[in-house]
Image (cartoon, rainbow, N blue to C red; front, side, top):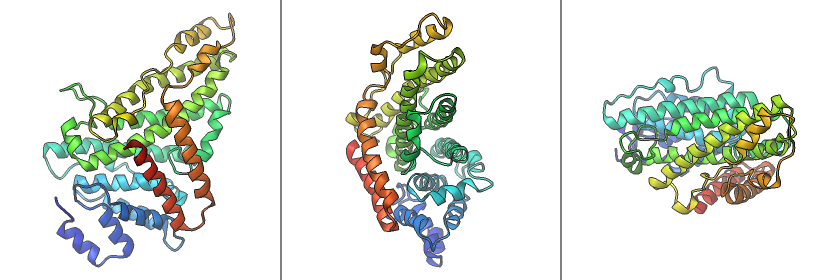
Length: 363
């Protein structure tokens, strides 16, 4: 498919500006959604004269198309608007009676091997986006949103049980993301994306775009999760037994998720989604803490106090030193400017500057 289909061209010719933009952003070409069309849709979510619900419903209409390319590109646009669009877009999505349930059971119009593999990706991707909406309904914010860093500061200071509730929601969402990216290829043992072979993923720009969007969400969630884990570890060895037992379960899952994220990042490197030097090393997550934590829970009251050397290991190497500090500083700066901006054009520019900086740091 070299470009837009005849049907799409005819649909766009007599449509409103919004509908034209929706069709162009989610056409059947095997390319990621064009930046200029996505930028226009981002701007629509900020324009007071545009009904945000029209943008939401227009995208759901595109999900009714039979071809996997259109459906997957529509999910990509949804994902981007959920991340960088105005909060009212998320609100309109979250207050809708249904979201991505129908797409979670998507059936392809083609019976090709590629369509079958992409169908599995579409179903898992839709399930992940659905879970993001459910999490938003509970939290009224999304940590991956351009303004999300304003709300997650609480993870650095809040005490259990509120801390465990927040960490649990975050870990559950991260689990759904890791399921969406499907970490192994049974035939080769190499990382792959949702049933695709590495060769298919390397040559499929739409699937690569989905991989990259999921990767960015993954890192943002990890940074927030890491903050909450550090907060928990600073309290752990003075906690009552029940709180410590719950904290141990959270930490055990954290260590497991670090290993899965490490494999996912290696997959991104393998297929060229990011440069080798941009891959954070999570393989040295602080496993040494687990025996001490288990011993504390098992022999509660026998000893208290966390050795200083373990405090030093309470953050994952690499991501804490580089991705966390530098990305958080950039996002805090952009978030403050974004919040202060009143002009939708300025908001869109700031969102794209953040996107450009992320891409530049990975090049």
